[in-house]
Length: 72
Image 1 (cartoon, rainbow, N blue to C red):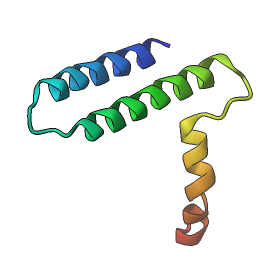
Image 2 (tube, rainbow, N blue to C red; image 1 turned 90 degrees about the vertical axis):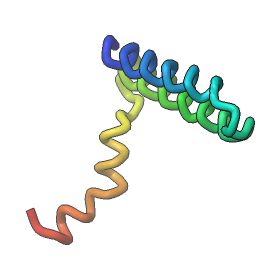
Image 3 (cartoon, rainbow, N blue to C red; image 1 turned 60 degrees about the vertical axis):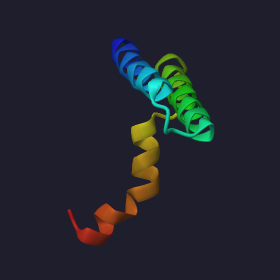
């Protein structure tokens, strides 16, 4: 849980930098906020709910065929 809080804090620092920049479009700020929110909620659920899939598990499900194709 501590790791999630650390990464969420780092992302919020990036968010504050993004808010101060004048060249960044409003839509890019909204997308960044949405991705940050989904990431924090997903990881929080993965830590608290036993059946919720971990992001690393999903990556292995999606790209696991590469290990068999390349050969371990």
